[in-house]
Image (cartoon, rainbow, N blue to C red; front, side, top):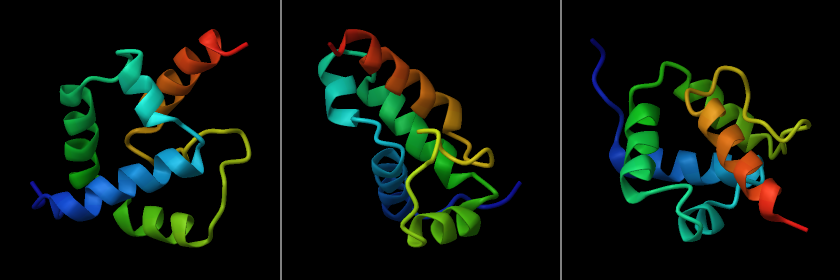
Length: 92
């Protein structure tokens, strides 16, 4: 089992990935689609991810997801997609 990454660094990686995928975490929390426990789990999952260096490179390239999704290697990809879909359902 590999050691987990630094919590603060991965907190910011998850934040940056949310921005890159245009996933509004504040709105998701306001609508109760994302709880504090869910958020903590996303950061914790990121801490154990094997793709951290690839993630940093992808984010550093200042790319925005073409399809609105995180790269396939992102451990939180499906969570971002679900949050985004839930928010899109309520937007006019």
